[in-house]
Length: 506
Figure (cartoon, rainbow, N blue to C red):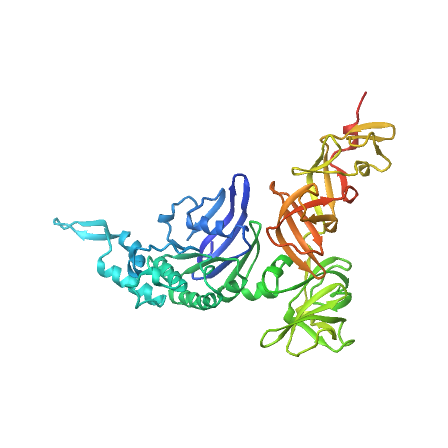
């Protein structure tokens, strides 16, 4: 392990009641680094932080501190401290006593010479003078050095947050863990505290590991950002790398505002999207289906006919130093920024420099269910959800013995397909979502929503952890509960074993 590395997570996995919330997570964090773990609610970021702190034990994997495995070490024996989302200050103590609380309990080794001249080492409490010195230093770092006697209940939210940080750093940890500490503050105070936290990090010189779902916080303060998705590490890099070179549409959508489109490579370093062909710097095989990301600030508006494609301005918002425009190009929407005042309804051209077009592999092109099977009624079972399907599509020229059964007739023979394991594929646009929970054959919660030009791409997760990816022009919000339905003919089915194994012998 690199000598500069202070924390190393190696294939760390955490399960709760059989549900994996952190999956084979590996990351090295350097001494003195400000690392932000970023992701939506439920992605596993706080669980990862709690495992580093010692409040949770990994199901498998190792957490190393300076090369030593601390995975099973209790929190009080780890040289780390945590600042929580709720500051957990003691309301009956003033600022000084809140900060000094841990110091008054702390014991340190001290060597004495006994009456016989022997050296004796004992654990002793810190002296009042040492406690005063450390508290004064901590309060100076957080700019509260004249508030020692203040009642914490009289402090503002930002001041209370600084008291919580002072209480954590006064114990001189090697690593400071911060779990969404700014979430309770208003917008202006959050922005001020972002600057102050970065300055505290510079003064202290220790490692900060910060958890948030706020992309602005991550971009403003971090040396490196770790983007998480569904318990896994999606991308690690500097704020500039994450913003300018996202590895997936998920990262691009989560970090900053993005235009995301389905595209096709038509020539070497030429990609078609929005109905036009744009030059790019990414080289993919010709005819490969790709995803294209363009940041709003990289879209250049001009005179109609002078760009790659033309569009019509449908919306305009003045944002101080620029206007934010929504431009309709066919059925797709392009969000862009421009310093010129243009009228809604006017026609414009669109151009994007090749260096500003990010082309990526498509993660998936359709839903695939490897562990599906057929029940006694001829339904396709995915997880715990049973869908009507066209069983006869498994074998060309076959037909069902009776409607609502699982016996297939083919070439004069009968085949019992009950419990037959199949692979099922279905296109994203064939998965239909509805607010009417009485419809459909499955039900789940929206856990991801990404706008891709002229539609949204959703992931709907059921209670038994089955995912349905769906493309829809309609808008749902994260955590909305929806019904899911798929037409029988939309499934492409393939038996995982030879058909002969299911023949019925009379």
